[in-house]
Length: 240
Length: 240
DNA sequence: TAGTGGTCTAGACCACATA
DNA sequence: ATGTGGTCTAGACCACTAT
Image (cartoon, rainbow over all chains, first blue to last red; front, top):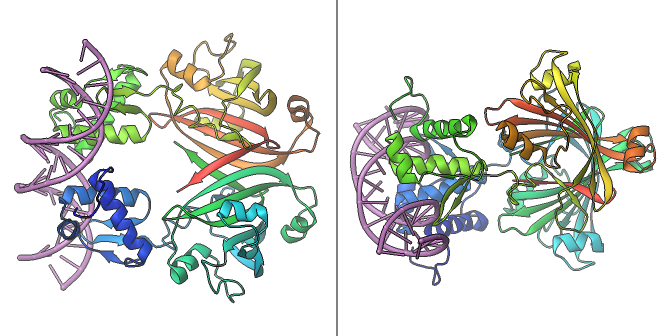
């Protein structure tokens, strides 16, 4: 690699970062076939093995998909293998199912302090607040609010027909890829709004989830607060 | 590699499995320095690069720890980096903290059907049932029951002084390594027993966790049912 | 100084997909 | 037949640790 005044990082990490920049910039878009290992090695003037190590790392991060004999492709959020990457609720005794959404609101508002802080915004900065109920097997299961920085997603507030899979929309319309998310769970009780929207009694136990989602550059992109009815559904985690 | 009548798997995967067998058999014990890459390559008659790939995979699975200049060591469950591998509760706004335990019972009983099935045992097979309350920052937070197959852990039932970290005990006394665990979470309400043990009101919201823990050979080793007070503590998950 | 793991290279061969 | 990723090898050099 020619550019990079200070090395610091090993070569394959520099290659990984360089290639990730092609994703961030939109030069590489979801579904696209990227150049072969040999071609990238020529472009970047490193060995094929070093390119391979970078591509393997990006594949581990679910940014790329490699197919023997065909080539290496940019991951798509709607890929069946990635659909459940950020959705951990499963109906008891059934196959994983992606929930439908019923929109209840989508407006630009000033960010309250508790929202501004995790998103790295100033209090009162404009954010898009999306409210919806999500259904599994026809029954309402999640009552949730999403907050996204309005400056970054121009035209999102008030947008008609927000699709079920919001991360796919962020990717398609603004080129933003959600790379990871942190969730914090607690038990809570249904309030009057939960009860009405989820069709349960006030005081029914719920799991409250607070999620912060990050993009490829590790900047916070979304704050999501979900309140989940777990009578016929569970939150599942694999620890390794 | 000489042995292995049918190849099927790539060489580095065969090396990984072979080396994992040394962990299972007890030839390699936690904390031990294992032979160098060159030495293993000589032993197994493969190249150093192939050994490296196997060791890297095992390091990713938290089975080994590599230290540049010193060598490769077998992981220890009490390693600070692994302590929280299977413990996801954190006190709000504090550093991660490993909970103390207060034992409430430890006896051999016949396995009820709901316990026998996930552990792969026959209904009524002898299991060790351990009951305890766990404390964080001095306050009770978890009311839990553990079930382990008695046949595999001779002498566990009725054992005095069961330590706080049970997985370390399983490793030290029976050579069993917990390699992964699946958890299912739901919201529930405190019953009279929860209320008494956790010092909360009956009907207080709790997170109920059911865990199944697996060993190196992917056999179910433990069923754990935890009921957690999340007033000052949260369950945290990283999704990538 | 010697030994270890970490990086990087170069090239051979295999397995798979496509034309 | 060609091009792709997947495996495997061999060897050079670097960075770190211990003696």
